[in-house]
Length: 174
Image 1 (tube, helix red, strand yellow):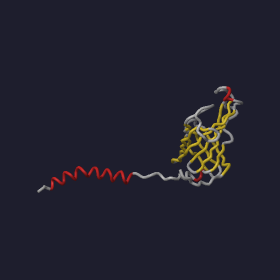
Image 2 (cartoon, helix red, strand yellow):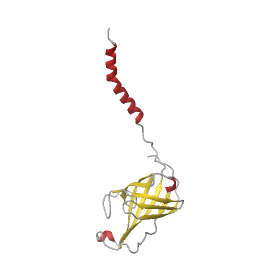
Image 3 (cartoon, helix red, strand yellow):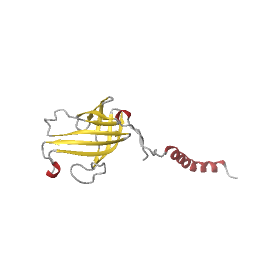
Image 4 (cartoon, one colour):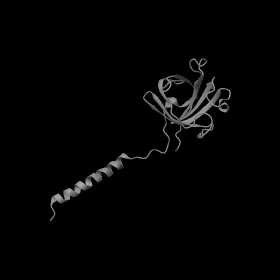
């Protein structure tokens, strides 16, 4: 006849395994197969038409954002009075760069994770100007129905945007 201690010792061996399996089963879940809806007040096309003291700056960039659900498409229109890149890329001192990615609003911060692309929004692996990741961070100063004021966390510059187009978020399958 086996004592109760024999069964108790086996219970101690299997209990942590059982608890671990139950913990994994209840903590894991699949991500949804549709994109997130993003922030409703950001949905649309936003453009920056000027920057403070732009006539005195040697180089500056103006932003254009297109927010659709949780995705963002960024156009950077750069103006430069000095040649900081090779002649074939510098052109007449004006060029555009493009980036595509996702965004997240956390408290008063706009966090963007994007990749530089070509004009057709396909990944840019080589060529003039920047390639790779583009990770801007902004503080949201103020937002209204047709205006958005951001502050770049890297350059401490103000970015005033006007809404030039509305977009309704229709989440798409991933």
